[in-house]
Every structure is written in structure tokens, then in C-alpha cells.
Amino acid sequence: MPLLGESEARPYHVHAAVTDSPFVMISDHAGRAVPERLGDLGLPVDEWDRHIAYDIGIREVGRHLQQALGCLLVEQVYSRLVIDCNRAAGHPTSIPPVSDGAPVPGNQGLSAVERRQREEAILHAYHDEIERHLARRKPETTLFVSLHSFTPAMQDGRRRPWDIGLLHDHDPHSARLMRTLLEEEGGLHVGDNQPYVLNSQNEYSGPYHAGRRNLPALEIEIRQDLISDEVGQKLWAERLARLLPRFWERRKEMA
Image (cartoon, rainbow, N blue to C red; front, side):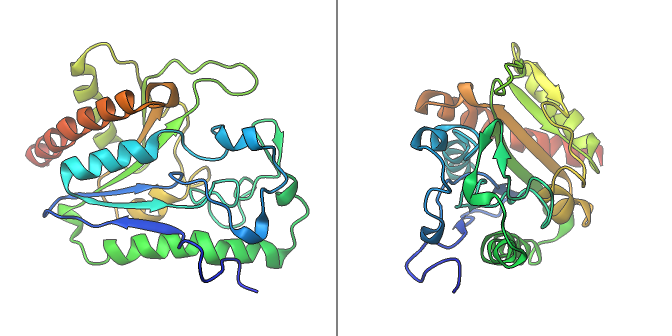
């Protein structure tokens, strides 16, 4: 049986570009849907409101930002607990048996067939859709923007002080330029490869889509308590909608 029934959502939601924009935005952890066949994965209801299930606030930020810029946005619809679309197939944290201290019974003891079902129905389908859009574009007129949010503290109590983090691997130049623009705003604590280090071992989307094409790229991480309500979501979307075009113009001037 296929993992997704005919009436269930596709693994991606595409917000089409309405302008000739350089920005291609993706949101790997926007959704928290679960295929009907998988039920609740054995998790209590309150766990689905935690950061382990999705990137809190980033779907709304992304949608406000897409409307402001008129660019393409591809969102992943299913929960990162079903399969994490920012991990390569077979990665140890791709289908986590435990996430930030919470056991996920529905992810434990999976067969190779069960893992492959999730990979084919969700992971590969989502990334194939992104590939279809990138294949139509010229690399020199494209900025790949990956949108994420991060929890202020993990279950172990470790605090994360950054308001926003810029992750980078093949393109540190773009991260440095965007950091300068953010710091010019004043009052922002900007992380450099914080709260995570971006590389092809830890992540998938950026290296796979942007790294192997050598596309200019930004991976943006916003702290979740800053975008947990509509006021914060709009504020950050407005800030990024103001800074991203400025970033692109400066980058072209410096090329």
C-alpha cells in the first residue's frame, strides 16, 4: 500500500512566483501533518506542539515574506517526525526514534521497506519538486533561501541567545553580507553557523540543491519565541522583505 492515500495532501505546497524574482525559498519543516496510516506515531498530543514536530512560526513567516517579495516558496507539508526533509535518506536522524528527549514509538524498529516508503512518498517527492523549479532557472539570477526556526532551549536546558542565525557551507560570503545587513538594524544577536553548523553531513537541502550547483545561498534560522505569534511573524517577514533585495543588490555589485 502507498504511504499516502489519494485524498491526502501532497508532500509539498507551492506558492508560485508572481514577479521575476531572484529568490527561491524553501521551508523544510513548515508543516506537521502525518499520513493517516501512521496515526500519531505513538506521541502524546502536547508533543505535537513542540519544536520536535515542526519549525514553529516559520510557515507564517515564509508566507508573509513570499507575498511581500512575490517569489517562489516551496513548503514541506509533513512533520519532521515522519521524515526530516533536511536530512539525506538513511541519515541517523532522518526518521528519529527519539527527538529531544521524546521517544517516538512509531519510528522505532522500522523495516527497510517502511523507511523507503517514507523516503519515496515525502522526502524524494519534495526535493524533486524543488529540482523542477531550479532546473528552469539561470544560476546567476538565483538566490537559494532556506527558512527555518530554532527552539530557544533544548530539553537539557541549554539556552540559545541568538535572535537569528545564518548557516553556511559552500557560500560563506553571502552569510557574511547578510549578517552585516542584519547587524546594521541594531539590537540583533546574529549567529554565524549558530545554532547549528551547516555541512553535507548534518544537512541535506542546501548542499543538495545549492551546493552542487554553486548557487548563492542563505540558510536563515529565527528563534521561535520571536515568531510564535502574528506580530513577531509579520515583523520578521517585513525585516527580511526589506533586507533580502538590498542583500541581492549589494552582492551583485561586489561580484
